Image 1 (spheres, rainbow over the protein chains, first blue to last red):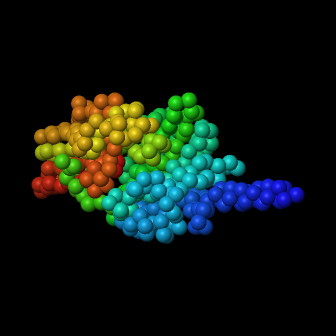
Image 2: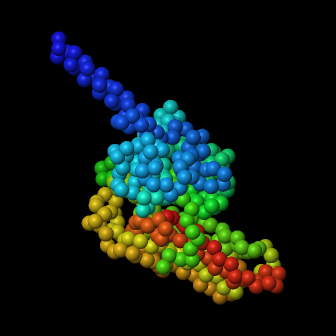
Length: 205
Length: 150
């Protein structure tokens, strides 16, 4: 009888643990959230002619990002990267979603959303929907145009890109590419990368 | 191959630069890698008084060089080839002809190499354009720069 009780308690504990993790919560209780729809995604990237990421000010410290986003050490991939994993609901299914916060010298300099799927049809539909939303929400791109998001059947590992430049010198880039590890299925990925402003330069040498 | 085409407009004259590169994302490292390929550039204007005496376009890529494809799923330390690698594609033309496409396709990285950008402020793929031109009889020199990747 005691054994059954102990087993039941263990089952309840693990069920709660899995529910906690899959809902995007960190083990210490903080909500490590990812975006859940296109409206939320776009408002987290563009504000008043400038490109931002997750409503965070650029150049704040890693500790400050962790505090504001309620992340912990388990989200730290390396000293210069924080990562949240989740899913993005789309068309009665979902894409895998990875959110990266990137630091240089302990300053928050860029952020990336990666939306991935092995289902090519789902990827094509996601790109079409993204294009429609971007057309409504953002100004004309600075480099290339939104046609990059058409005909996404033929993207390769080396990528396709469309980019915007903000009034303050911030950038937003959308890159499409495929990845496949040995023996794995082909993965189709949309990367949305927002970058903090940097001074104008006349070359890198 | 990724291609980015950016028109940069000065006074009544536009210089369009098409940049060629490859972009790879490693899900092993959660890092972006790039391979510099080449540039094309041309100028256009609807103002018939515009003449261009010099057009300079640089495409710079700078930072640590790695073996490709090994770096995609192996440790950075074992696949690094060189620190502070630098490559420049350059178009420098006196009296370039309107609408003519000028190319530098000779400064390309080998297909088995990629760069990793680690210093946000000093590394990237930077386009720099400087134009010496005349519009409505007045001489001007203007320049602009932007990052194709960073």
